[in-house]
Structures are given as C-alpha cells and as structure tokens.
Length: 256
Image 1 (cartoon, rainbow, N blue to C red):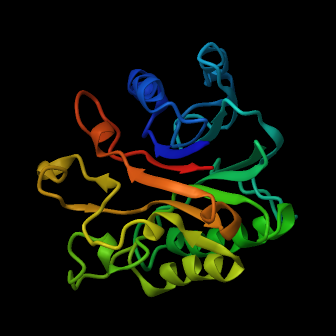
Image 2: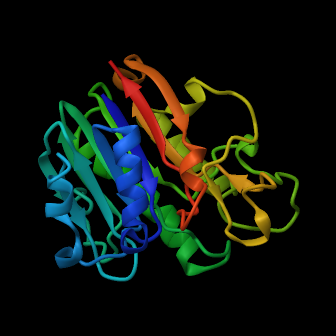
C-alpha cells in the first residue's frame, strides 16, 4: 500500500497537477492539505471516477484537509476528538484506510515567534497528541501525514545558521514533535535517509527550488507498526517542477 501526503496550495489551482500525479504515482491513500475549498466545492465525484473515495474538511478560501483512498474509508473524524472546544479552522481529518489509522494535518504556520498564531501552533500540536490518544493506541498502525510547518532538525533547513528568530525551527516547535515521538510516532522519512538538504517545500520566489533553498516540513509520522512494514519512502521533487506546481512536493511511503 502506498500512502502519500501533499500540500497542494489550492486544489482549484492544482487539479490538473493532482490528477497527473495520481495517474503516475498511483497512491492508495493520499492525504491533502490546503485545499482552500468549502465542503460543497470539493470534487468528490471527480475522484470517485478515478477510483478514490474521499472525505474533506473545508472552510472556503483558507486551509482545508482531505483523504482520498482506493482501499476504503472508515470511522472518519473531522476535527479533533479530544473533547475540547471545536477548532474553527479546517486543519485535521482522520479515518481508517485498510486497517491503518491515518490523519491528514495542516499545522498552523505560526507566522512570527512572538505572534498569537505561534502560541496557537504550539497548543494545536498539543491537541494533536491528545487527539491520537482519543482515537487510537501507539501499538496500532498509525500514520499522521501532512504539512507540519516544523523542521525536525537542522538537516531540514537550507540555512540553519540564520541568526534571526523565526518559526519552523524553534526549540519549542521541535519539542512538540518530540512529544509525538514520546507518544509512539517516528519520522518515517528519516528511517530511510539521514542526509541534510532533502526538502519538501521551496518558496516560489528568487529561484529557491533551483538554488536548493528549501525546508523539510511535510512529514509522515508513523507508529512502529507502520515503520516495520515500510519498504520505500520518497519526496517526489518531480511534482514541484513544471507548470503551476504547488510550492510543496508530495511525500510517500510504501508499506507491505
């Protein structure tokens, strides 16, 4: 089974690119972020014609997450299942696909280190851990994929020595990832690749993609039950090339 995550940065703008990628990469499950669509706009029938069931949580021009699956969708949960106040932003959707508990997550950006949105990001990540505790167990097959807007370590940043305070690389943000690891998740990509400079996001400006000025912020965090079954993992940089690409590349894993 191939499970992928991709921040498409507006599904309306990227429909053709997503169709193209589905055709050649043929994932069994695709976790989407930043659909930027309302519920009534999402092209459920379009994907059904391609063999994918789909579920979506959207709010219009911002955010939006979805799951596409060729292997079934069960027990769909929109938003957090932690019993706390509803988060009005469409940033998480969960389901069981062929026995694997998957979550598509779009973690808040944080904006600036001293911004309220940065505190929202930290609290959101804390809620993600509580959400997992509510819907599954660390011993289960679990995969939480998406745009985390956090670089796990300095290998994942093109300029790690930049002295200016900025989000995505702070110790507090990385501690929220460490908390997920304490719960029982593993950065699946790093089980296959240890090198620096392997990125999943590049700014559209200043030729960042060609200059290798990127970040690795699109992660597949998986339980050991998934890690043990994983045979191959890749950031598909090809999907970042060509006409009207997303600024993110898809990341996928193959599991037995």
